[in-house]
Structures are given as structure tokens and as C-alpha cells.
Length: 321
Image 1 (spheres, rainbow, N blue to C red):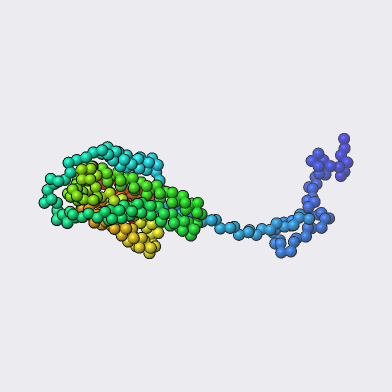
Image 2 (tube, helix red, strand yellow):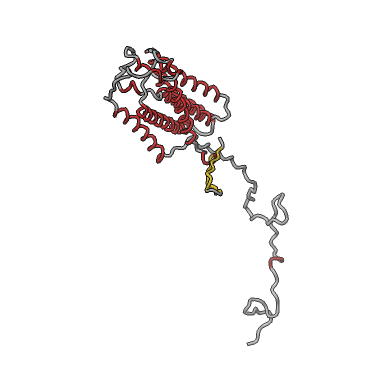
């Protein structure tokens, strides 16, 4: 069948003729560009407003809350607290009804010159005052640390609820200091069984010289507890305010109250000087060591390891405090 001129082929174009680009010959007027648009940018569709390409400034992220000062490890802290309480209560219950012959035949010449001056002290008022200070040194750190935690929580990022959580951790640490101290003190007391100064005088007003309590002089529990609690609070305060000038007055007040408690025990005739000195050293060691080991950043400040040497191995311990 003959093909008529001008008829379209199967491809849709006349035979032997290349189709023209109709986009270049459209009779429709070109879309108007919005004012300020660059020639390279395509014109927006009719009836559509151009999008705003500007970005709104993002709000700054809230500052991260600082980590709690103390880190609690229940798997370690609970057994340590329990062991301290068992040593304290168990030793007291075991010796509750115990008695001894007294110190009438004790040789005074075997007492060192410093302690010999304490013989004859019999001051019941000083004994009561030392008891009152002992309870004060146990309660005061809890109250003072709560006040400090609330003030710090108000100034630092966070809330009072977070400050209360930090105080709860401090309470656990302080309670652990108390438990470790009283447990160790009783363990030493019943192991040494040193007669108290008043046990050398049968007519004293401080207690029965035949009672078990009369030979539990070394070392002073009042002195060790007072120094342990007060130095623990001062240590926690110093760790929280490492650059604060108030740290020096806090330490002076803490040591002053604890030292007064120890001196009153000697004045009362309850302990020798060496008893309160040893108790002060033991209590201070516990009061500083336990909070320091609970620091949340201890792993960053303390490192240890083994290094081989010609004769074996060396243990290296380094710290930054």
C-alpha cells in the first residue's frame, strides 16, 4: 500500500524527518522569576510561594549535670558496714557480763611518764561533756553536709532533688566511716584490754573498777569516733569545694571539736594521753581514707600496675589528688 506524503510512521514522526523540539517553540509565555532570583534557579510553579531557605538559630543545649561527688558500690559498702557493726555489737554483747579483779595490784611504775600524770584525774563533768561532744560529732556532719549540698545544688546546674541525692550518698559514706571506726576500735580494745586511769583508784566516781569497761582504755573510742566523723565531713567538703577558702576554717573547726573531745577524756580520767593520741590517728586515717576511696573520679586520679624487673616485678601506684 503506498504511503501518502506527510503521513506518520510507526515511530510517530514523518518518514525521513526529525521531530522538532516543541519546548523551544511553545507559544506559552515563560514563567516570571520572582524578584531577586538568580537566572540559574528554576522559576517556582505558578501560585506557589518560594520556600524560605534561611535557618533559624538552634537553642543551646542545657549544660550537662556534674557527676555526683561520691560513688556508692553496694556490693562493697554493704558488707563493710555490716562487718563493722558486727564487730562493734558482737564484742559488746560478748563482754556484757564480764568482770575482772580490778587494778589494785597494777604496777604504776610501768606507766610511761606522759600517762602517769593522768592518774588521779576524776572529773565527772568532763566525762559528761565528752559524751555530749561525741554525739555532736556524729550528728553535726550529717546536718552540715545537708546544708552544703542544698546550697551547692542551688548554684550548680540541677535541682534540689539532685542535691538531696548527693547528700544521701554522703550519708552512706559517713555511716560507713562510723561503722568501720567503731568496729576497729572495739576490736583493738578487747584485744589489748588496758586498764583505764580511774581503775587505779577504787574510790573514783567514774565507774566500777571491777567492771569490764574499766579495762578498755586503749584506744579511745570517743577520740577515734570524733576525729573520724569530723575529718570525714571536712574531707567531703574539701572534695566538693577544692578551691574554696572556706576549706581551711572547716578543717580547723573539725579538728578543734574532735581534739576537745579527746582532751576531755583525759581530763575526766577515762583515758591516758597515748589512748587519745592513738585514737585520733586511727580516726583521722579512717575519716580521710573512706571518703577518698568513694570519689567518683578516683579511677581517673589513681592508677596502678605491675612492671617486670630483674628480680621479679614492681608494683606501681600513682595518684593525683
